[in-house]
Image (cartoon, rainbow, N blue to C red; front, side, top):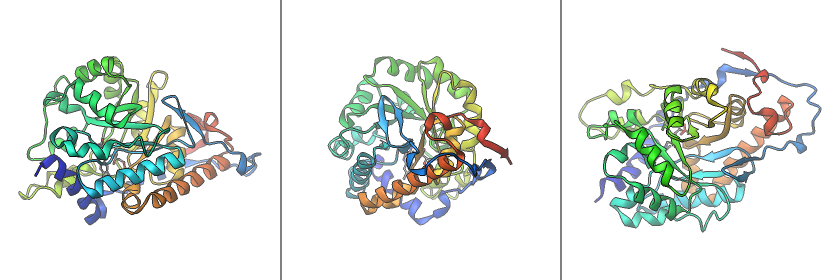
Length: 341
Ligand code: FNR
């Protein structure tokens, strides 16, 4: 058996067995928004649609990177997510595509364009893998199999550092990402996986020609805690570091000075349409969620659609109560924040 392929299932099982992998940081609850008693708007005329990577989305939701591989369950998850993304016209990213290269049968789980012919689809590879044999040809192959609109490089030094055999040589990764970005057929996006991109990371990404950053901060899924469940040597470093990192609203504020040059995606611990509205106010063009969509994705496309429709309704309701008729009225409108605790 191929460890890269088996690992994807171990991660899902760890999340199912231990609800505390979702750290429930409630960081967004510290932000208090205003309430308009005279919104001077009709709820029905709120327009939450937005453009991302040149495509129209019904509202600024991204199904964040989760999975892929040669397993029935994993194929089911990705197919259900893709069908729901297309039906609701939201963006979707796949999980790490490295498994395609160790286990070619995994390719089928990433061939999602047939299920999502029009919406934004984003590929995913590990940035550090560029130091471990991953090259431009593989990145392009990852894009091509998905017919992706863009490619995420995930940056996960914490997750690698708490594994006994993690890939921890991150030297020169920013330069290598820059070189790929210049030659790949689609734009490169950077993301963390739940510990947050810092201002210094964004500056380094921008210097290497990258302009899209998914902050993937702490407060939601903890990869340090998940990796703890995969180690059986009594070492508890994964628990020690389970809450390490920049909470997503803090990461958004740190990134704000770059907003004239950078497009931000908020993810990590967003759990409802109110968290989404707060993220857009803090400068996010798109809001990602992973863990809340995992269980529904194992069930059916309809179950995923139901969660997305709930989020859309919550997001529109927040916009109504803030007196913001459309995305430009909400985006970076810090006057809507009355207090940060
Ligand atoms: C993830 N995440 C992730 N990220 C990534 O870049 N590549 C990957 O392969 C995966 N795999 C993965 C699997 C599962 C089951 C989950 C829940 C998450 C991280 C994810 O994209 C996101 O950045 C964080 O999970 C934060 O979002 P939530 O879960 O707090 O909404």
